[in-house]
Image (cartoon, rainbow, N blue to C red):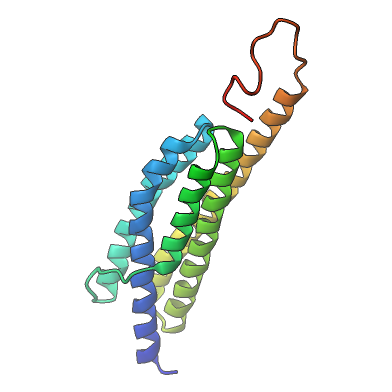
Length: 182
């Protein structure tokens, strides 16, 4: 494979990532609203702001590649977002839905980590260190978000274990069902 072919592949990968990130910018507000856990909602909102910055960074990558900032349909991200929407629709508000949202969000993060890693490796191969550096920055942000989601899941699991361990007192009208949880 020659350098020209690799540059074309890099541009194709960047177009795919660009479209994927733009899809996320549209999807994340709905996901944040569906979160029961305030910590999870804040994590999703923070990732929205980060994703918007990543879109801007990709536009810088397009400039460095002398290519118009234009995406190509990313069917992978579309499918992951659809799965995330199903997780929201299939579960009642509460910790189970939050954990389903985390699972869907982590699948998105893994997809992005892979996409950015591949594009970065191609940029390194063709000797484009500026592009590789920008892609690595985003790849590291995606890894950090994945780790944060794991931490939030642990907090949700821990709070559920504590809630289940609370004794139900006679006359206490608060039950798991009345709090909206099953």
